[in-house]
Image 1 (cartoon, rainbow, N blue to C red):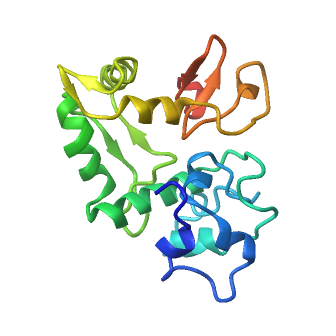
Image 2: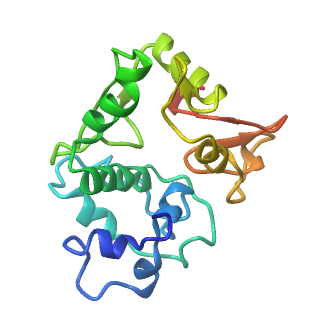
Length: 196
């Protein structure tokens, strides 16, 4: 549920006396990187931290969630944790069954946290051919080899502008659910070191 509060999903990981802003964070705030904290990438830089969920949820909150976009891979890590909690499967196993195998993608792998959860916001690797399959799958509206794997409506929703963003010409055109908006009514996935 896009409006489910992460405080309910991660009740066992919440800090004692959480700030009111943290109690307001919803799944959609993670998807749009409107978490409400400026202290991003804390666990990514601290592999010695045993419990990344607790580390992320104990970060200071600078604003109400949903009010300002700030690119934050920790939010995407929490989304990976949510996939695991809701599906009862490891994120990469879930994706393998639901997406990678049906698309004939054989190369995807991911770095993981100390608890074994796929990092989500960084560290997923695959061949250029496999990422091209994913791109074609999106262009075909969630259909692959004549079979619908993902709702066209979800792709439209995920790739729509949900929040303002800043930066250069394409960067300032907004952000969807883990997709950047760009010129000519297009959207893109964008990774470290110039991966597009």
